[in-house]
Length: 394
Image (cartoon, rainbow, N blue to C red; front, side, top):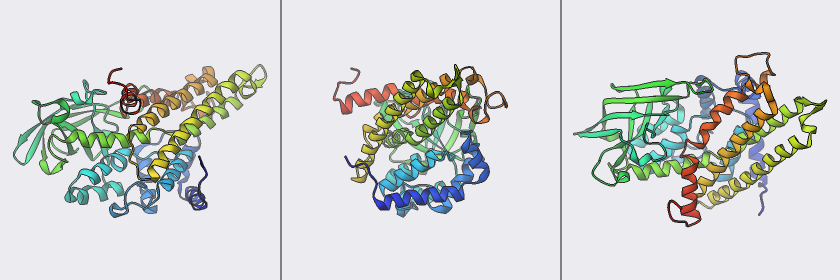
């Protein structure tokens, strides 16, 4: 397998690096250098910079405002952004509901929503999970009752990431309780400013207000906001989740994290030697390096398929599964290498080098990666059924 990039693609990678060196604001760059978390204002500022460059939605077709990049160029751009530690843009508009509207939406919906998703004028969140419907998403109970030209929504969604900052939410709602669960679900776009919508933020164990419980009480939504047919939302949801899982390989982010582990090990001493000089620690780091390289090869295979026009399929579950596991294992290794210093937090300046204060809360947040986007247990079922050909549940 030839894994080398063409001269044209290598030139594009150099163009991306030159752009990052010039366009990344100094305050955001300072945070990136120490792997600190970004607040929503910083993320949206970077969104607008990428929008002005034309690179905010590398996967969008040109007719919807995309840059017309090849599959390889999209891969290179994503990887360079991750390696540079730039603020990760919210995926809910650009990479989830936007493509869903392109594929299943009406021309009117495309004209209304896509330009404002692209520019960042409207921010989105996702309304899938419920308190009793997470991995078994088809059991959702948030109800949408028919009322002429409108649907009336009652129910609750949970783990709605940054819903407190969102302008719109795309939701799966129950429109028919008298058919098979998957057949009675509708994909709906809801204005977060609608009367009866309430987002209640909750703190994560890493002390970040990343998630919300979102409540709907007699919320009236025009039927014009239904994407796809009523009761046909499961098909839209499956297509959307396939794209989300492909994004969760996180190869660039994990490569950056591996470099961070090596840096910590080089600065941590035991018996007069840095941990990088100890065979045991070197073995653990080398094992993770091998695991990450194997994941990168799988990512390249997915890239090769994309170059041939192949849409992400069950293989995306492999990328999601291994990508999140490796990311968690790297954070665990970082914690082990730091020892007692790993107990420090963002606000404990001077306890450990500033650049490492975020390891503990980021380790805590990383526990969620094997749950969101479809839990890793569900990914194993998908792999068993659609790749290995095993009966469901075996």
